[in-house]
Each structure stands twice: as C-alpha cells, then as structure tokens.
Length: 433
RNA sequence: GGAGGGGUGGCAGAGUGGUCUAAUGCGGCGGUCUUGAAAACCGCUGUGGGUUCACGCCCACCGGGGGUUCGAAUCCCUCCCCCUCCGCCA
Image 1 (cartoon, rainbow, N blue to C red):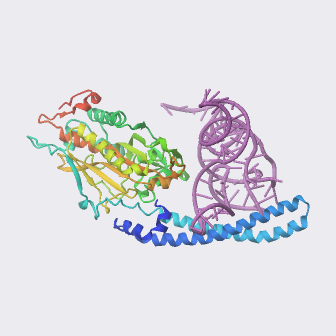
Image 2: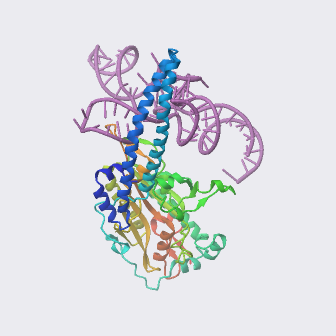
Image 3: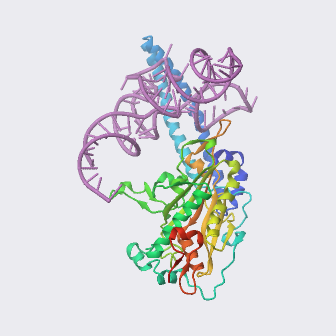
C-alpha cells in the first residue's frame, strides 16, 4: 500500500501518478485524506483523555496505599466518566482508521517515472528483441497437434479428470516438463545466485493481501476449505503464483542491511480460477487453470531496486537464450501495469505454430508497496528501519515455455530437437517422432 | 480427533490487580583501564502512532481480538500459534 505520509505531503503528485493508470483511483486520494484527518482529530482528543486517566489512576493507587479510601472513591467517580468518553472515541478512531486503510488498500502502486504513458497493451513499448522468427522448410504445427502426435499431453483425459483448462502430461511430455523445472532451478541457483526454496502451495489470506493479490483479485483464486467444515472457507487459498508465499517469507520481520539482497527461486504449480473466462477461449496450453512456474523473488534496498530489476529480467531472458528461443522484451505502459507494480517488463516468446508471441515472464519492481503491506523492513547501518523494495519475476512460466519450445524446435520428420543445455535433464537429445 | 503444557524485549527468564518507568542474566553498542586484547567496572540498548520549527512531551504495544476495573503482563471470554503424549495417516 502507499505511504499515508506521502498522500498527506504530496497529494497532487500522488493523484497525478495514479491518474496515469487511467483507472480512476486518483479520486480516492481526497477521500482517504478526509478519513485520515478525522482519525487524527479524534486521536488527539482520546490520547489527551488517556493521559489524564493514567495520571488520576496513579493518584488513586497512592491514596489506596495510604488508606484514604474516601478521597480515592471521589477520584474514581471522576475518572469513570472519562473512561466512557474514551471508549466512545476509541471506537471512532478504530472505525475511521479501518475505513481509511481499507480504502488505501484498494489504491494501486504509483507507476515509476520511467514508465511509458499509455492505455493498454497496444501502447507497450518494445525494449529489445533477441533472435528472429525461425524459418521452417515446412508448415510448422501448433503445439496442440504436436502434443497429440507425440502423445506429450492428453487434453481429453485432462478435461475428463478436472474439467476444461487442466492438463494431463504424458510420457515425453511429462518428462520434458520435469526436465524444464530442474533446468530452470539449477540455472538460477548456480548461475544467478538465487537460493532455492520450496513453499507451501496453499497460503493464508494474509499472504494474498501482502502481495496485493487481494482484495482486487479475490474472485480469481481457488479458495479451499477443510473437509466439509464451511467455517474454514476463505482462510486458505491455492497459490496463483509462488510470489504469494515466497515474497511473504520475511513478513513482519526486520532484516539486517547485510542480509540484503535476499534472492529466492521457487518452483510451484500455479492455480488460477480465471472466473468469467469460461472455456478459457484458447485451445491447448496457453491459458489453463493450473500451470507450473519457476518464480524469482528479490528483497533489496531502495537504492538498488531498479538495477536489480534489470538483472532480474536478464536472468529470465537467459532461460530463453539457452533454449534457443526468439523473444522480445516489452515495458508495460501505465494503463497496462499490474496493481502492485511500479515498473514491469514482460518477456514474450515467439511460438511459430501459434504465429504469435506468448507472455512467459513478467518482471516487476513493486518498490515498497508490498513490504509496507506485509510490514517487512530492514535496518540500515544508521539504525533506521526502512521498507525494502520487493521484486518478482517469472523465470519462467512453464506451460507456455513448453509450447514455444516444441513449436520452435519441431523437425520435418515430426520429432522435436532438444537444445543442448536441456539434454542432460531430459537425458535425450530429441523427442522421437 | 482426544489429553495436557506453553506464548513476556535480540536471546534466556522473573513478574498472578496499583512505585511495572517490566527484575535479573546473556548478547550487542559506547566508554574507562591496557602496547594490544581479555577480564573488570560504568553507561546505553525494542516497535508503531500523535504532536512540536526544534529540544521534547504524550498514547499504544507482554501471541491477536474483545471484556471486567478508576487502573490489566496479571482476572474473564474468544481466536491463532508452538510443544508433549495418545489415536488415525502418506
């Protein structure tokens, strides 16, 4: 969430930056400030009363000690009324504060100054391109056809088990998925300095709020309950991304400056209800309810936030480079950016069978927006407690990487050639026709 | 699922209604002494909020929330978490 002090001190700046998202959130600023003002007024009064009550109570204690019970009783009568007023005001403060914070939690992060102004995906500037569209001597098949021919994925039975949008990987397909996961984790741990973690796949509601998934995307998550006990519903959720647990690892902690940067890599399946997207609109593996992903998370000082973001994107790009895939990096414009992010790069890989680019990674610096929500701080050398920048990036999403890989490296004979770096993991140099 | 025991500062650990401004120890920081170090001794040592130009003053926080009371770490209710044992179980 945004810093309430920033809203107080520079309300117009905050409104201007929010307005660039074209989502109407700038209108909430004045409302938050009005609630904030009411809170502070009531707080000043109630704290003064509490100071008075504390002083009188102390006197009563002293009088009791001297057995001057009559005087003590008189003081009690006086303080009783103060207590009633305190109760009333405490309630006002709590209500106004809850209202202020609830509204503040619905305001997205401010876009970084370097982010292009724009309305939607059409306005996203392209930053760089790697490689080129492969030239096939034949008409490349789509991954759906390839998966069926090579029996990599059994779409029909996946749907039979869990409905549309769920995949049953089979044979070489299951093996390729597993090989990719291990390849990605090893790459990021050994080459890029990330520490491997394996988080729970079911997370508490507070974790979802911490990373800004909630309250906005509450309808997009799978909520779980314990057995048939409906009272447990809404406490735990299947994770939509490993970001939810991993970014929260140090929530409510104060890290030492020497511990930063903290870099984690985690594999997890990701679950997305995609409510309202019945049938998902896309055949195959592009848009599904469950997919695998290797996620990168960094906790860094604000001074290094943006250079760390560049490194993070580079780490994700390395994956595609090693796998011989053509991709482009784009910078999300103000209107297209995610809720918690201040700046986001998307990496889109070319899928020749689709004839389109697929988003396989989204790398964001959320600055202190998430750390503030989860109350994660670090202590500077001078002993000051500050909110660190939290970054997240896919390194990368698997289902679409799988698609790009088989579509790009398919051969005329129907087999799929495996890029050199992946061969030790698959223990094969091609998937046979 | 059943039975029991716990949750107090960075850590250990006292405190069962009013000098709690939370004892004491350890650790950490600074200082004295020393060629240097150790030891000893002395001082300091949490988080958030409000207010002030500032020094400072005030409020809250002993797992979370609520209650009783003039006054709660302490009493009551409730939730969460941890530990031990039993049962079930991959």
